[in-house]
Length: 358
Ligand code: IPM
Ligand code: MG
Image 1: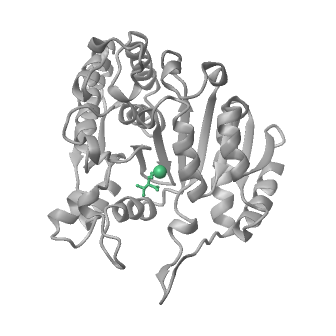
Image 2: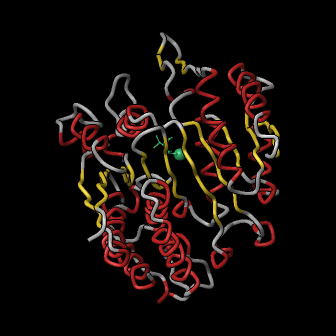
Image 3: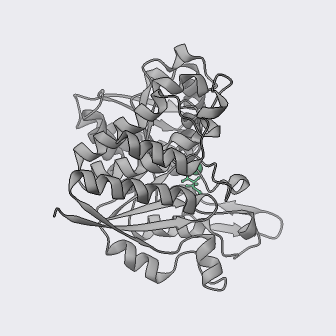
């Protein structure tokens, strides 16, 4: 019997439990095929944690302990209208997600944007614009406005954006390392014409770039980058940027693939890593069995590859997903006018198709 990997699974809210069920099914199938085992244990996060703790916290201490004691964390999604309380000091589901990123030191978020050729018709962009698109967004994940002071004043509010030089350096370095294993091109995205944090970002990025003479490097303002992502997305290899810009640009970039339901992510620090789809909990379709599980399964692929070193298993999973799409199977979000009705399947059937293709 091969090795057993301990996975802390965090189904969370909304469609989270439905797509996590598919991830577990697929892990079990991979375990059988590759003679390894995955011991998945659920813990609470987000709205479901708020409910279970009587409104106290979105990130119970036991969840953090379980995460730290595991080989990797696999998260689905958090949030929903039930917990949408905008009053000051309210306990919100997102605090669970931001809290675990911070506590595990997951400063580097990788969001690969990969086009599946059979999905080209599902993207709102013309297929010719998608040719050659294969980019990686490296998003700083534990700094910036997300973690600065948030405050209400008598007649307003403020959110503070703070970055230290070392916070910038470590994530930019990861971007350059990633570029070496890809097409060797880093674009650093900032708003250095306006923001002081961006001017520091630009200085540090140039310093790091000096240590990677083999990697092509350029800077781009974030507004221009947003435009270039739809005008000429194939120009990008690795984009590295701060937390808020990365949040926004990665949702935008996901539509190159046809759906936010296709974008996986890996959040890395120096210890246990976390893998999660880039999309949210989609409360509007929760509980209906129609959510697209593929971003969750692509997150599993990243976990197998990055945390467990199971490259063959990761390749097999990626190949299986590609085959299922090539065979025309679609969840509703990636279907288009040309998709026959009998090829549109639900969450669980999509998981089954991937397992069959494995
Ligand atoms: C993401 C999400 C989160 C973020 C939300 C749910 C707090 O949008 O992972 O991109 O903004 O980081
Ligand atoms: Mg986001």
